[in-house]
Image (tube, rainbow, N blue to C red; front, side):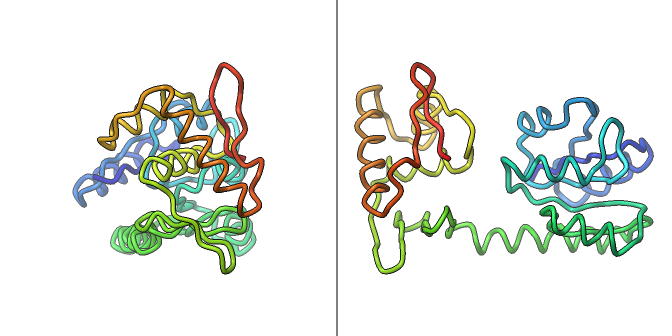
Length: 220
């Protein structure tokens, strides 16, 4: 079930959106801590965010900009502002769509569905810097060069990609491998990280994975 985070300070609208999403097969969550929205987003790990422009302590456009520094989660701006300037700003900051209040519930659901469908068709191919990664085939490609990753290397690389620019601990990586039915111990993880680094280095990404001594790794 897809999780959708509602960032809106009007309780009536929040409840309406929550009921609409629940009845349509989604799992809605309403943001309550407007002082620390980024922490809530990281903890909740939503599949999509409905974000109002007018929210307490900050504004939706600034929050959108900050979210995009670390996450590509789909975001639809839901706002009472009906100006081209706000729409242009929102889209330039990385919004996936923009809908104004009062919105048509059917149109909103169609737009949400369209975003998820688009992501499903793109989910097997991910871009990182100047390379493309085929998650299904375990291939990384740069221009005419293709390199095959092992299953464990791909799981590790995918986890680092999904937490890009954040420190990932060794325990997190081993837990993710375990969740993918791949048992791996501490020494084996070191070997897999070294092999992954060597393969990335061979296509010009020498310093992509940074070691944080005693903590873990960061994919820049």
